[in-house]
Image 1 (tube, rainbow, N blue to C red):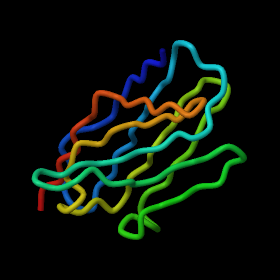
Image 2 (image 1 turned 90 degrees about the horizontal axis):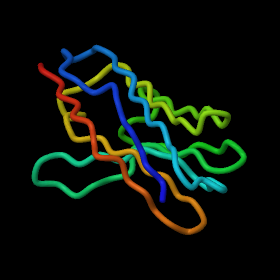
Image 3 (image 1 turned 45 degrees about the vertical axis):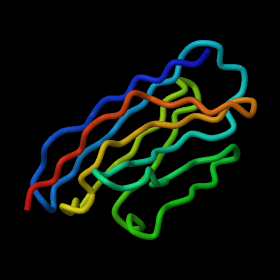
Length: 115
């Protein structure tokens, strides 16, 4: 089993910044991808950003230029730097890890952006 512990969410004014962290532990043999998804009230969960083996990063169009994903391989940790926050970024952000074909999810961390 893989456990994911997220941190860094909170309430911030529009234009502000946050940094989310997600540390993976447990039976980690090989991680194929680490990333962040988000789910706003009444909406489906959507991909925000992802980093796959080799370092390739993928971003949703709505966050390009504002969000930066990075990964610390030595500590199995993934970060999401969020800048220029907008009210529409308000959502629960979930960490996701893909390992040996299995998807693992964090408990979610709330990000609320006030206008």
